[in-house]
Amino acid sequence: MEKQHKRARKLRIGGYVSTRSIYCEEDVRLMADAGMNAVFVPWESREQRDNLLRWCAKYGIEVILFERYFHRIGPDPAEPAEDYRERMAEFTDGLADVPNYLGSALFDEPHATMFPQCEKLTRAFKEHLPDHIALTNLLPNYGTPNQLAGYPEWILTDEQREAWNREHMASMTYREHLEQFVAAVPTEVLSADIYPFYWVDGKKITLPGYMQGLSDLSEVAREHGLELCIVLQCLNNVPGYVRSVETAALRFQLYCAMAFGATWFFYWTYEAGYGVPEADGYLDHDGNPTPLYYRAQPVNREAVALSEVLCRYRNLGTFAVNEPLVPRDTMKDAKYTAAKLSYLEFAPQYGGLPAVKAVESASPLLVGCFAERDGSGSAMIVVNAEDLETEKPASVRFSLTGDMAVTAYPYGLPTTLIPDENGFYHLELESGNGVLVTLTPAGG
Image (cartoon, rainbow, N blue to C red; front, side, top):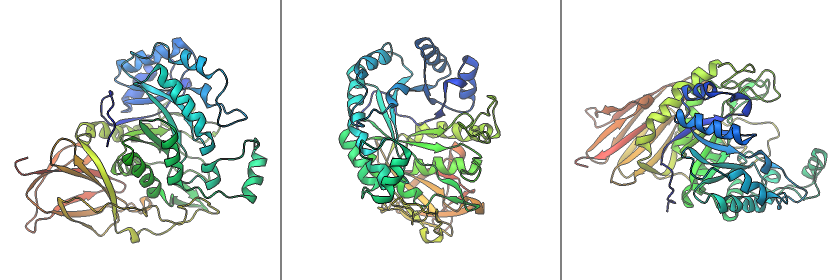
């Protein structure tokens, strides 16, 4: 059963934006022109916060405030700082009636031992702003079992942590990590970052177990009636580690997340990379738009264009087509649970829509299945799941079990599909691309 929220149901797409990128209204206009309708941003003074909210409201941008203070961890990871209640009252003052304020991010990538602290901070936030979001962003599924479970409170340094890792390995799975969080922390949005594109031994790979991580998040969010937020990779050019994110990679991440039911998408990161001179984001180190800014612009606008249609449907589950065609890459010495999977392998997989007889292709596909919230229609998101390095397009055909009106939304634009003489509907997907297809029963 889905939880009901006062905020509008929509697709929200934006990025993490630090205070060094927001000095004036023109900076916010630049974000809006990139196609963003939401941002995730820290603040340092009441005046700066209020200016930011006012400028963002003018350009139709909703705001999650990132509370730096609450990211501190004390000697006991289960306990927040002693003055957290007073500071929470201070930070939330004046926000209750700000229309474009969505909520605040209180924690990033906590271990399970920190969940009690997350719970206390969330409840303190809700005492002041019960109708707003207290967001905790979780680790990805490529966190090791020790990272997911956490460490004894006496471990305070990297050296102690490395020594512990050599002698101990927790048994916690990613699904258990997510379930423990949801059981401990009252939340409306399940959020995690999963960055799929890497260099390994001079080879570009897509993260093994990528879809399994999305699947675990999707299953838990759906079972608990939560919205799903996926933090997307756009940090570019970290030598020997993170590979460049081209337009196909942006679309691939977006449509894969949508196929698993996500409706919130935040890129890490809007600006140039922290402490990495060669890395950039939407902006370079001088605050100027990079090629990535212009690559992301149409992709973001595409998501916003799909929002009204897609949000009429709820996610039922996801399945893969031709999963064995995707080879298993490896990440050296990887210790996370899904490291031996291909990027397309995941379980469980949904059995498919009753309205769809078959989805066929010579290429690997990801197919998200949806049911209309207030009607008898259904929908699919079909993603070309070929390895992006091959740059292969995918030809897809599907058939239905009955007479229906079929509309596809390539690049966010509606197109009526007509079956061929054998009753098949056809889609052509470029490398990394996906498409929303709605199925409305005749007379519906």
